[in-house]
Image (cartoon, rainbow, N blue to C red; front, side, top):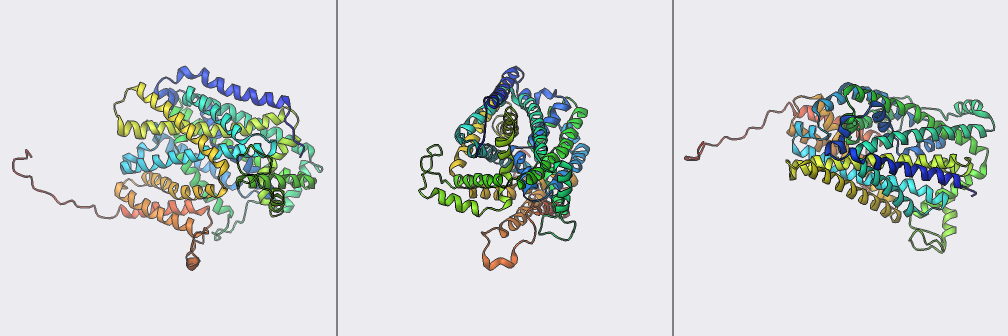
Length: 550
């Protein structure tokens, strides 16, 4: 495959990395207190907070996966984006004022207030573990196509990117993170617009004819409109999934809550949330359009599809720890029958398996010098905005929900700032180590993690919504609801997996995977509301012993 990365592309990429590092250095003086490090002294504009919310929302996985979805199938996943304005309105109306009024920088302090210490520890501990895995996965999946397409050393890509993000996050705190997110959002948008313009300029039939053909071929469909089908990703199933997932993002995700608190006032916070939420809708449409356009462009170039097929096959073998003889960079044993395996792997691939690698292939092969560097910088930007947000929010929770809450409630601010910096560094190192470990692990490890995380995270949004909806919900009803809800979620997840015994096949969940969080949240709300109707537990009274001073 004839790919290119010219000197001008390297210059663009170097300028981007240098700018991110310089940003953290320039803002280091404004992160010399715990309030400055975690909430930017509550002084940020709505514009910056909104761009930061948008950039956090769009990871490098989404940047490559959204075009892949519409390339391989249709616009059915776009329905998820249609849910964002709905949940943004709910968040602006109820969630944001709730957090601003409470004033705590921790999203989970409110859970403790409603349901007790167990709720705060459960949500905070899971969030920290989830963000650690997320940092590793985002770095790994960002570096993987770079290694396969350009031949770059995957470990070097992970280390350089991770070190840069840890550096500016450590120096500048959330102020540097928000500013970097805003810059990265612009890079993402400019890069995507340039890419679509180049794709349309190369379409043999032109964009208008292409869109007409796509409509005829069903490539623009949003899914079945039958509301009774629950085993497929219909319009309504994806919409329900999008609403619940975005309620989790806007309602209980520490990354978003800190943006609400960092804004200089509630008006700016509302403006930022509207900007971040509404911006995602047209931008996701832009990425879906890129994927659809690439489908028709590559239809006219059969050789291009063969190259993408080989890239995906190489990537899958790399994830299995299989490399060709003479390749010492991966650190895995050489396979003497590598090329036979490569051919067999490629022949077994279907169109849906190729989607995520079509856009990187186009970037590497068909964009002019400088623009290729800009698009690769955009992929890095999407990853770095997600990682930096995870680092700062994780450090904030370590300080507020664990160190200050349980170890030293009266710690001076200087010590709290030290805890924040140490936590940022430790979580950064562990996240990078996780990404490096994934280089040698198979993809099944990722599947196991996402299965477990979908079970554990399902209880958090349900518990939060129970606290918002019911004034009578307390620690007992909350604990009962979460226990029953997690059991229901575990059944839906495991019964649909290969781990479920064949003898129990009739007890498999009939629901699509997107409905796991939706129905789990509904179970938690329903059980929690019923539990509030139970009579209060009576504790036997004890007579005071003589002479005890009572």
